[in-house]
Length: 62
Image (tube, rainbow, N blue to C red; front, top):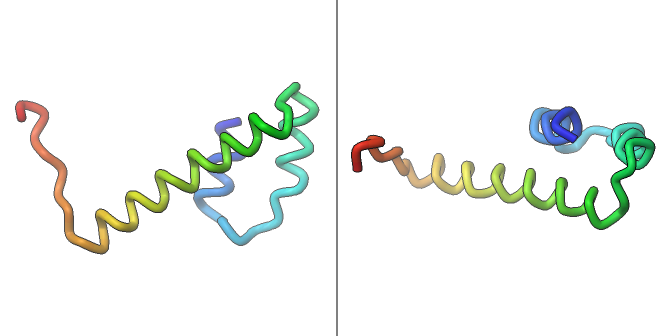
């Protein structure tokens, strides 16, 4: 699952059919694969919005 998410993050336009087949071979169904893809895409989207707007992280102390 994490390998798929990393591949999707690093090469979003790449061919990911073999990775999806691998997930299915490990017991992930279509819904789970969709959710992995959606969460990965969401984090990429949010990070790009934050980067584009110059949002800076808060200190852990608040």
